[in-house]
Structure formats: C-alpha cells, structure tokens
Image (cartoon, rainbow, N blue to C red):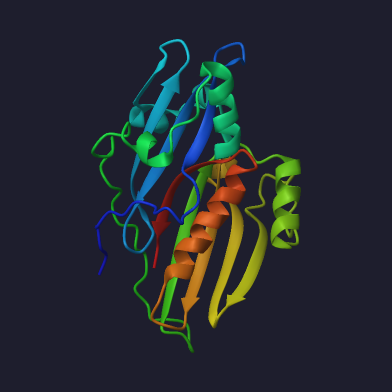
Amino acid sequence: MTTTSVTRQTADSPALHYYVVHDGAGVPEGLLVEEFLLAADYSTVGLVSGGWSRPEGRWYEASATSWRIRVDAVLRKRVTPVGRPAAAALYQNLCGADLPDEDAVRAFFGASPAQPPPSSLRLSDSGPRPGFRETRVYRILFTDELSADGLAALSEAWQMPITGDPADPEVRVLGEVRRQVSGDAFRWELRRVAAGAAYGLDVTCDLLGERDEAVGVLLRGLTTQMRQQGMIPVTVDRFR
C-alpha cells in the first residue's frame, strides 16, 4: 500500500538544492533554494522553494518559479545548479551577509506545495526478486541537457561503462551500474526519456533486511551527482 505521509530531509541529509539565478545578460542576480517533499518510501509528493533577489533585496516563496523552470527551457537557461558553499559565497558577495542556515531558509518555503502530489505510477505489484524481502523500482527524472563532459564525469564517478552511443538519437540506455550494500542489491540505468528531452535514472532496489534507509541515501546521492553535471531534478516516482 502506498503512503502519502510527507517527510522533510533531516540535518544529516544532503543539503537543500541551490541554484544561482542569472539575469538576461548572464549576471548573477539571486538564488533559488528547493526541497522535495518525500513519502515514507522516498518518492516525491511535492516541491517547495524560496528565492532571494538582489534587485528586491529580500527572500520570497518561489515554488511556482521552481515548477516553471522545469517546463520553460528559456527560463531554465537562467539557473545553474550549485552546492551550498557556492551559494553562500555568492550571497556574501551580493549582499555582504552570511547565507541563512537551512532551517531559516525553509521559513520562506510556504506551508504546502504549489502543485498537488503526483498520482501513483505503481506499474507492478509483483513479488520481490528471489532471495530478497522486497524489490522496488524508482525513476529519478531530470530535465536539461547532459553534456559529453557530464556523461564522462558520471561514468568515472560510478565506474559505469558507456554502453550506448550518445550521438545516436535512437539510443535510450547509456549505461548501467550495479552495487551491493550489506546484503541489499542496487542497480541503476542512465536513460534518455521523452525522445531525449529529459533523462532518467531507473533505480532497482532489492532489499534483504527490514530497513530501507539505504534507498533514501542512494536516491539522494544519485540526484546530487546528476545536479553536479547541470541536471535539474523533476521528481522521484516509484513504479514497483
């Protein structure tokens, strides 16, 4: 049964998602800070965010902007994914103050997502793979273009052989990775989706024990590594 309870990342989770916002001439003019709200199984149920604008000199609720950059390619070119240290350095440079801590930033997010939670995409309720207690399948969806350098960096970080020709528009799966962690088995495929307009990581988790924290750690880590290559996460859907 699917749960819809909403969780926020805790202090020991990776940082919130930070973006530098540029004006039409490419000059940095602010920050966008996002957080995905997660169900108990680590699938996405919402997206909230706050922004800071140098021209206005203030923070504001920005969930609508976050959703717009995922559907508007022109607007998307004005944002660049960064880590918190780069965001803090820019904030210090633009306004001469320390970037607020993450709890303070969350105060600008608003009380609820700008969009309703996505409908369930559970496509299969088949049993676990033999030898495991539970099998889950997720897709982490990303928008924007993955550069050749970005693909090479992911291949090196994941020790992932590139099995498909990136220059061939008919190729969908570009590589596959397998990992074993304390008896649990994980594998993910880097895949082109929507005729190459987006990318997905299709992640299969075969769980041996009762605990599933490793699933959340893996999904967040993969998302962070894709963001480091300029990709913008859209959602984490669970198919099984």
